[in-house]
Amino acid sequence: MTDEILPARLEILRLRARIVALERAALAALEIVLRLRPEELEAFLESRRLELSKGYVDDTFASDLSNPAERAFVAKEVEALMRALQSEMNVKGGISLPESG
Image 1: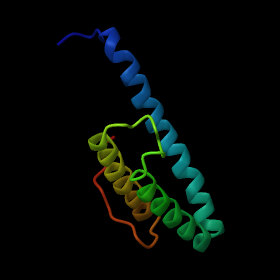
Image 2: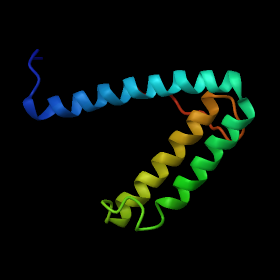
Image 3: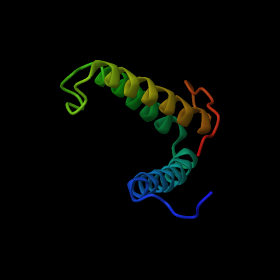
Image 4: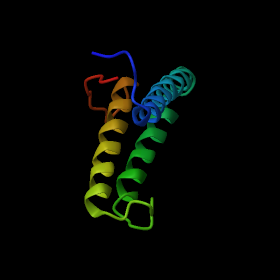
């Protein structure tokens, strides 16, 4: 195994690290909101999940996704991730997913 990272992989790895850091920062903010206004957070997360679930079905939403299979894939992933977030916040509608880093 080599210690060198291929230049083509660097950007993907940077994006992955950025997403993980962003997820953790968002989770910290949501934890604060959960302590201050739990009912409002629950309603907000559920409404955003429903909005996104319906959004990806509409081809005017995220118009860069022109491939129906890609659109369906992203819709399914967003649904699962939103439900996992709801689960982590212990709000109604959540479904636990294993952490994958």
